[in-house]
Length: 284
Image 1 (cartoon, rainbow, N blue to C red):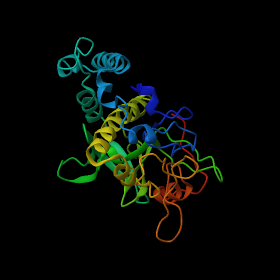
Image 2 (cartoon, rainbow, N blue to C red):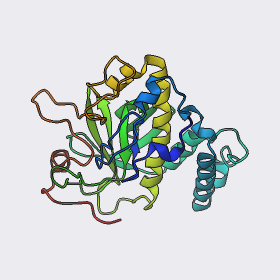
Image 3 (cartoon, rainbow, N blue to C red):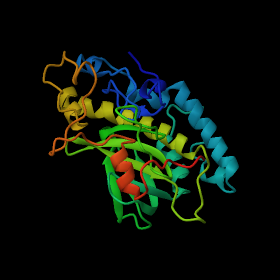
């Protein structure tokens, strides 16, 4: 079996979903989890995604678009302009060139937003830092990423509340539970805002890299161990069983018995931004 790039993304909301999850953390839509196939030792083909025709074509098209949009783009991107003829698409190189031209605002779990951040990607890591690279705000391993995509309201039990200004929302596993990450444009009336498609491209590219990193990880540590790493406490030792309840991954509980935060959760949104409940992102 070889998955296509589209198999890594939720059919309902379009966000990246970890290959083991049967339900999208963002919209709760059903997703085709691949835990059983991976446990049987099947090759899902994620390691070859940078050679997939869809990825090669999109990276090539994005490279040319960015080059045309910037005065020095052609020279700066000369190393990746030939992706159509190359064996692998340089998605990491393109993404870092793309991201370094922007500044970001981030909401990390329930903390207040932090401004003027830079984003840097490696094949296995995502880093948010300030002007000085040593001043790191967030450094996560991509294989722990459970989801990332454009923000959507939670479907149950009540409509979720989104944070004003958020353009990309994700969850990653930390200390056995999902932690929410929100990414958007910098605050301030005169801050330069990214193009409308900036975060859509960013979410897609990070999703491709996260899926590849996840496959490398479960090959290294085993399928059941990696399932526990991404916050699935119900992952059993039997490789023939599918983790979670009724075929879907359960949401781990916090020490106080409450459910861990998911992308779009009202509590995280309202507390993280200090805005009144019910406020949603402005269009555009």
